[in-house]
Length: 529
Image 1 (tube, rainbow, N blue to C red):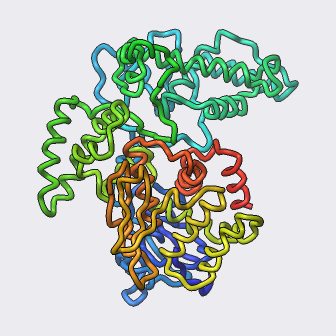
Image 2: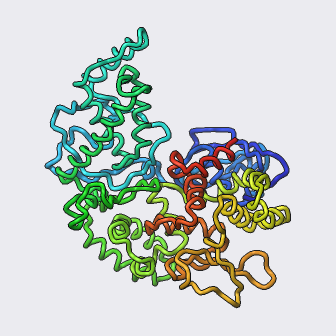
Image 3: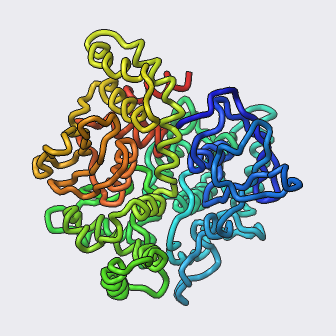
């Protein structure tokens, strides 16, 4: 990120007329509005689309739309205006419930506004699955409010625990507690990982320490972990039996698996890279047949000029159909491009990534890359041995003046070497007049150099022997768009670059950053020290 490096900058930030905060940018103002907005959104943990406005003192402190960060000075006032209603971003919209389902206990909404709840001993009606999840797994899992006949003894048990450390032994409550926890977990994922289950149990016992079971483990958590794990499996089975429309469960049902693979644990298709909407249901009233018609209309719409709005709407509408095709069919990249040509442009790849993860692709990647650059360079310069020798040309290049894009490229190439991997496994460099043969590569970023220019004249993404994404503009942006394509096409990371892509995902995009390999975990600790 290019900064005005004169001095740290302090700004007064107004968010939607209701909040006023002070923001300190230690490295000054970013050079572009996108990077400036990304820094603000990440600092204040804001999601969604915003317009940045600035207070102009020449016009009696009126606000104007920001078109360049050059006009922002130390202690200026800026304002963020949301481009769409908050409810679009934060509210899950459920499909209309069938008459067969009781509305007594909404799935995935454990925090009823009226405070009402239903005991698990009652008949529980499971509603339809929400069309899209809009929230990632929370940093701190919030334990739901249980039914009255459970909350009352829990409160008494917590008081007794505070007084003399006595524990509550009431197995009859376990079923109610587990049912509520399962509903709350399903709000975020149908297949929680072991670490996520552990996080839920830790929060449960922190809120209700009287539920600890020291006989099962030193921490008192093991028994609850096992019960909750089995409860989630039973909860998924219950939803299947009641035919709740949920594709991410249906695709793993035994009847859909071929003979010889009808084992619940075999070839299970589930989110593995923090996908929030891995396999969402179709929109209300839509079927695969109606969405196929929409796809065919899209083939005509992409041929028209100035038609971005229609394309965006149809791509959003057909998202669930596209995900079903990707997850269940694993199509070849070229075949998928023929069926969905609208996806293979920068704007739609970014939007598809946001639908899948709720994360802004380029903003998050570039902000974290720039944020860690100074520390990364320091770590690389301190490296010894053979790696130091390999890194020396890149360190020499970084000591010279470079454009921001070349600096980012150099840092990424150096990072690959620092992680003990080969940059040639990701980048293929060639001259403009002697281009490499794309058919030789399964996955590469093709960097095309001119005769006298430092910056590349073109950067393309190669997938499965085809040049799938030309004109990326820069190497860093190509890495960003490649991550978008990997998520959109549900591709595996190259084994020879496992640590590089783990850093891209878990450090630069902050997706599933809890579970890391020892090498990447060590890098993260050094970057945060």
